[in-house]
Amino acid sequence: MTVLVVTGTGTGVGKTVVTAAVATLARDRGVDVAVVKAAQTGAEPGEPGDLDHVRALSGVEELYEYARFPAALSPAAAARLHRRTPVALGDVARHVGELAERHRLVLVEGAGGLLVRYDDEGSTVADLARTLAAPVLLVSEAGLGALNTTALTLEALANRGLELAGLVIGSWPANPDLACRSNIVDMEILAARPLAGAVPAGAGHTDAAAFRATARACLAPALGGTFNAHDFRESHRP
Image: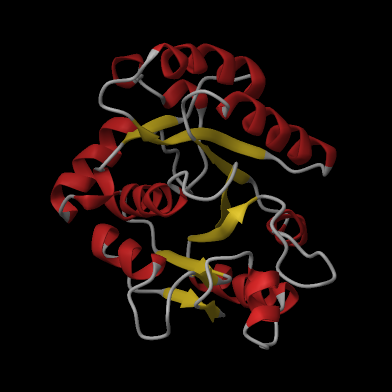
């Protein structure tokens, strides 16, 4: 059994699509998967959320969301705004531990970036990963400014003793500019390993069959849900 935390260098970098891709590849190999989203922000109750997108793309049905806030803010700020009790990451960690007893892979998708606050005490996805002793799959973007946010997030992971499972670009443009192309070299230097993959922009808007083919081509899965650099095929580098 494996727990893998999926987080990003910020919001809107493609974490949900990467989570769905990892889930798709794991199921493709007969791995039983559950997906957890500690808090969903920016979605009204009853509206489709990130986990609904994961279900549509991957076919995973074991999906758990612990809190939802309409405001597109950090979970802590949204809870204050809506006068709601913040999500308790300790409770989430305990439930993830229980899920890990029943599933070979549990994917835990964070909200926003690694250090986004979930409560007024400052609990973050980094704290959740440390409690779970889980490796972190980091999703970044390509383009001007991406290197700094990636470097800072990798530094934060290292400073907290968290294992980097891999670095993925979550939305690789169809026509990458010079900054995007040069990012590939620099991000591999920052991560001290080859990229674990790059998901094309728009992949999350395809049907499940097309998405499965994209996931197979663009990510480097090792059984159990973590990534192994040597499994990433050069022919599929961006």
